[in-house]
Length: 184
Image 1 (spheres, rainbow, N blue to C red):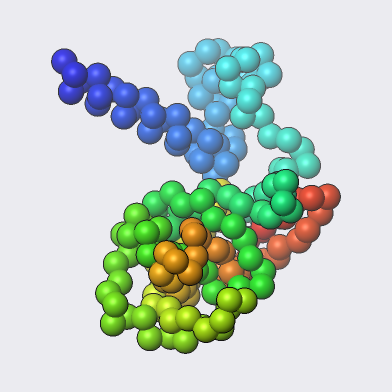
Image 2: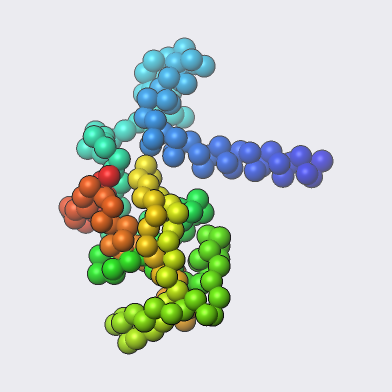
């Protein structure tokens, strides 16, 4: 019985996480499903689905993501590194994407002590990093493949930074009204 409840919980959670992603990549799908199952062709008439209605200023002509600045003025977002969810901060001053060892492990990337061969100069001095290539780095509907990155010791970095090795794969990125717009 407990196993069935846990399985049902996993399925419901998966669906809840997938709906916004599906809607972002297939914007016409939710109204079509609403019409099919509920007999309505106007999403506004279905309150539970109205949250998925697009804001016209965000309507993409290509794949676009808007990030709001936090209280410190930083832009952070939920990225997927090789398919695994990672909270990361965008750093336009960083040459490459950087992950700490703990975040890399959670993303299925494992390095050994001997892999830390690349000398890097940071604001705190010179450190050694393990160079890697991320198969895929995603945010919203944006996907960049084969992204150069480095793995740093946990003591050198507290999480993940998204640097120019990701940003240069975009069509553009732009700051506008305390927002960072990423477009592919």
